[in-house]
Length: 79
Image (cartoon, rainbow, N blue to C red; front, side):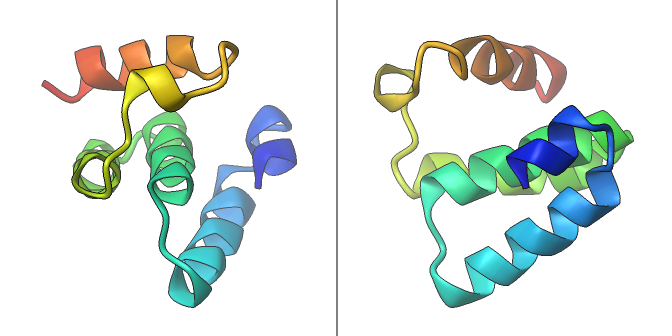
């Protein structure tokens, strides 16, 4: 899914992430789903996914340094 996001193929990323979440829902997967949904322009879906990630204990301290800017972007965009 990360490759699809980087290539701008957000629908394919969302498809893969939803499949992965169906098998094993994790905060990281919801975080990346929110990233893809925001990039696609679906703010409502991105907000729901980001909220789910937070409920599953996503915290900026746990993210890879390269993911922290996206966390800030999601937080700002989805207020």
